[in-house]
Length: 151
Image (tube, one colour):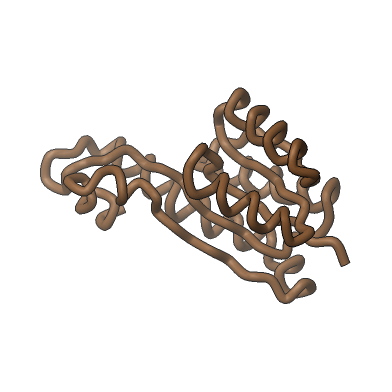
């Protein structure tokens, strides 16, 4: 059975490496991010390596958009066999941050993740799949890690 990897929060770092790795193992790859140009470049890179890939422009802070993109990817590429959740929030100090930044970070890192798992749950059960969650921004923003921890 063909399986699809959902990469939510696609960018040039760890998510590209994860997409290539799963793609090399026969997964189709669905890339989700707000930035269409980033998605298009990612699809071209994966296709050049013989990996079936598609772009789904998605705001990960919008739970309905997340669920819709995952449903569309599953219908177009095959059932979800793995969900890789890798959004990057805005660094913010726990004492100095604007409440709106905390809200946006929470929507991307928690609410969006819950929506994604709910949308992929039936596929993940069918395929024996997995959910992988990372926060690659911590490697870049050590001083802002408290804001990520709070969100």
